[in-house]
Length: 276
Image (tube, rainbow, N blue to C red; front, side, top):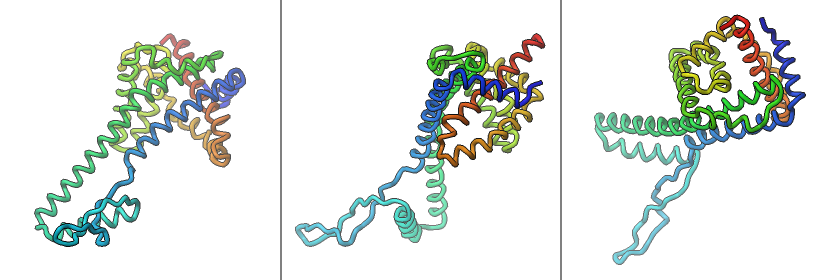
């Protein structure tokens, strides 16, 4: 039976042994995870160019003066107003059926664009972030056990890359499916499969069904206690926010990563003792 005090002490010991390398790995994690998240935000909130008619913009033709259409970049309220005015003018000339078809078409286009953006984002997560997270887990576990080299973060790309991508995808798919039912089942599955990246960090060739089953076995009866363990870091995260992320980078992030790795090590030791 593990305790929060035990895990956190192991994390502190590991941090003292390998401090600057652990901070560097946490910094790399923040940069990679943050870049993917910012790409998602940027892709879904690009500023637009609205085509408007400017009555003052004129060009001389052979038979007189003719107003022309000018492309004016707009953002924020200007975009919304321009779009609403255009829609209002168009809808005045439409029948009820045409309005319904028009609305459905717009909704479908928006949905397809959103799905396309998130498909690209998840492709980045599946192909880059997930293998990287497996490498980070390997680095943290080795740091808890003794010492680790920064090169361990590339482990997921160098060892059974396809199987790691497949297994992590299967995990994400199950968590997402359960989350669609309600938030709580999704959280439950997230904790049930929490050990999957750590298992892959040790055994990258393991079939995905076996990895998911093993994680489920390891977290049996431990999910609630792991949840409380995560909650215990909330005051530390608040301190990180107050210090504009300085404490988060140089202490809280490494401390939490190592504590989570210490949990995996403890559960693995328990399984070894039980002969599983």
